Amino acid sequence: MEFGKLADGTAIDAVELSNGRICARIIALGAALQSLQVPDRNGKPGDVVLGYATAAEYLAKPQYFGATVGRYANRIRGGRFSLDGKSYQLAANDGPNHLHGGVKGFDKAVWKIDAVNSGSPASVALSHVSPDGDGGFPGTLEVTATYSLNEKNELSLEYRATTDKPTVLNLTNHSYFNLAGGGDILGHRLTLLADAYTPVDATLIPTGERRNVAGTPFDFRQPRAIGERVRDGHDEQIRFGRGYDHNYVLRDEAGTLRRAAKLEDPASGRVMELLTAAPAVQFYSGNFLDGTSIGKGGRIHRQGDALCLEPQVFPDSPNHADFPSARLNPGDTYTNVIVYRFSTAGR
Ligand code: GLA
Image 1 (cartoon, helix red, strand yellow):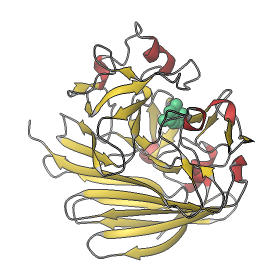
Image 2 (cartoon, helix red, strand yellow):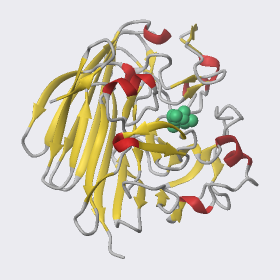
Image 3 (cartoon, rainbow, N blue to C red):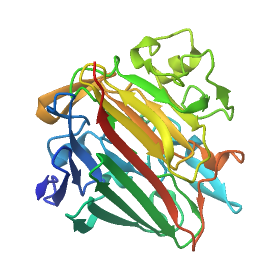
Image 4 (tube, helix red, strand yellow):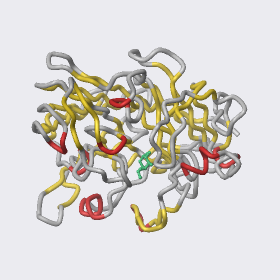
C-alpha cells in the first residue's frame, strides 16, 4: 500500500505483515517499522512502537523512530577513524561526534521493496545501495533488511551487507517501544543479560572501560522497573546520559542468536523478549524526547515515553582495538539478526 508522500512528491510504500494477532507495518523510508499492533493479556490490540503518521515528518523531525540505522549506528568519536592506515572524516552531527550514519543516514533513504511473501512466515525484503564514499564511508555497500513474522509471534529482522572495499559498519533497528501503547515506560520491567556496560564520557563516547553492573543503577540482571533508578543523579553515568543511554555487553558469545533482554509491562501484561546475534545492546530510555515530536494519533512524545534496545557492535569500535570489530571486508557478508518475541503474562 502507499503510506504517503515526501515533500518532493516521492511516494513511500508500506507493507503490512500479519499473523491474525500481530500486525507490523514496514515503510520503505528507512526500512522502518512504523507501527506494531500487539494484543494485551485480554486480547486487546495496542500499538507498541512510536512512529509518525506521515512520511514527511520522518524527514522534517528525525528521531529514528523504528528506522534502520547506518552505516554506523551510535557514535564515532570526532567522526574520525582510520582503516589500513588511511583516515576518514565523517559528519559531526551530534556535538563533536558522528551519530547514526550522519546527515543522511539509512533512516532517510528510500529503500527498494524487493519481495513480499504472504506465506507463513509473512515477510518483506528491502534493499539499499550506498555508494562508495557515502557520508564519508569507504566502499559500495549493498544492504538488505528482511522482516518476517511467524505463527509464534516472533517478528524477526535480518540485516545483511556486502562491500567492495574494506569498511566499517554497524546496522541496527531503532524502534522505540512502549508495551502499554501509551503513557510512559517507567513502570516497565527490564531484564538485560549483561554483566557489564561500557561507560561513556560527557559526549557519550565510550571511555574504553567495561564496567561491571553489580551494585550500580545499570544492573538489570534481574527484572527491575526502569523508573526505579533512571533519576539516580548520584551516578555520573546516569547524569551523562540524562538517564540510560549506554551500551550493554551481552553475556553470551556473539555470532549465534541468543536471548539478550526481556521487557514486561505489568499493566497490560505484554512481554517482549529480544534475541540477537550482536555482541551488545544500546539501552536508551528516550531521554531526548522533549515534547517536540508529535507521533501517530497526535500524541506528543516526552522524555521516558518509550525506550530503545538496539542490538549492535560497540559504539566507537573503529577507535578501540579491543572492542568487537566493526570491519567488513570484500567477499564477506555482514549480518545482524534481531528477534522481537511477544507474549503475555497474567497479573
Ligand atoms: C540513540 C542514541 C541516543 C539518541 C537516540 C536518538 O539511541 O544513543 O543518544 O541519539 O539514538 O535520538
